[in-house]
Length: 411
Image 1 (cartoon, rainbow, N blue to C red):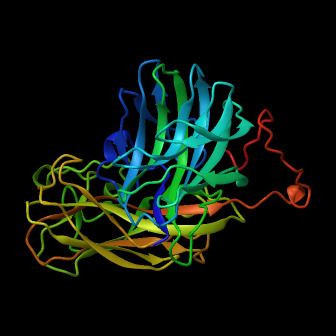
Image 2 (cartoon, rainbow, N blue to C red; image 1 turned 180 degrees about the vertical axis):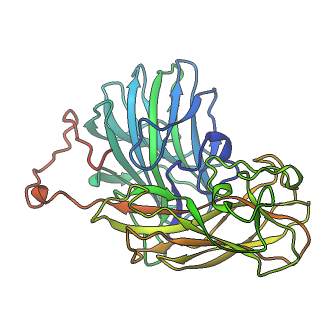
Image 3 (tube, rainbow, N blue to C red; image 1 turned 90 degrees about the vertical axis):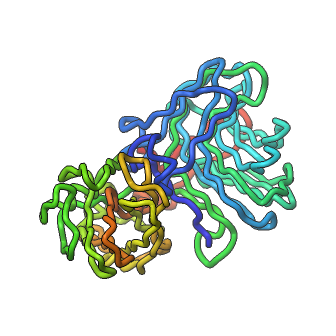
């Protein structure tokens, strides 16, 4: 495994995050921040995450997973600070030991500088550039829990490396957290986009995630079907029942045409194939480099018996089918009983930007239970081509503590 998580906050709303594996789980720290999605301020795709805190609230989101303490962790988040009171230091992103809270962070200090620090003690390890409000920055942070080795980058430029706190639990959080680590809080309004977590294993994405941007290609037309109908038992328009952002998901006996697709036939070959948006239509510009793709689907079963389904990308590119089980709660109004199914990650695939990919959702267990899917799509990470006039004319950027570091690849 190398890429552990790709999250562009494309699936819909904070209420989806506990079920949709492309989004992380929401957690809060000692307060109730306002959590929302923004379609106006975003770096790429349809929307970004917005976390707003007051002088008495903290809040954020975390991706949590388990892994050996010796594995190197790399996280990325595009961050846009609209405002911050700067009464005290405010954490923006962090990697931490889930049990002890030890780890490392990138924060905004009271002078407006980005700093690297220890998450558990709040001690500053290194000071970086002055942050400019209302500007996208790509923040990257690395940490090896067993040794405390840490480094950080801003907009792809190294800010240094050092030794921070160590971790030992084996369960880690990658946090997008507007968190005040001291007693007196500072109000802040922060947007996040293009969140990614890598480890240092495998042959791809085994280091810094880089400057990539994330979009989600959604269904736009039916391609083929066997057995499946839309939620109202119709045989056409199934694509409009699988492009729900956020997911809709209702019980099989109270479906509407656009809520989900379903199949009650006892079969392991019944499937639905959708034509997706083209890469260009989803916002991937001409000349872009495709870093990776991953198919996702949100599925459920009509009974409490766990059943298997499959999802794959059939064309442009081909990504082999992945199978996964539904939960043991009967699928009802989303999110009750709905779970996420994802393909493996395909790294550096060869694709045609103007051609629409196709995806398939398959009923994998022979049962008269109703198999359902209310969202499927293709997550795509890309890097835009550099403007020709900039190539070979890049001015050196210093990271003096008081010099702003301009953001790049915004939008």
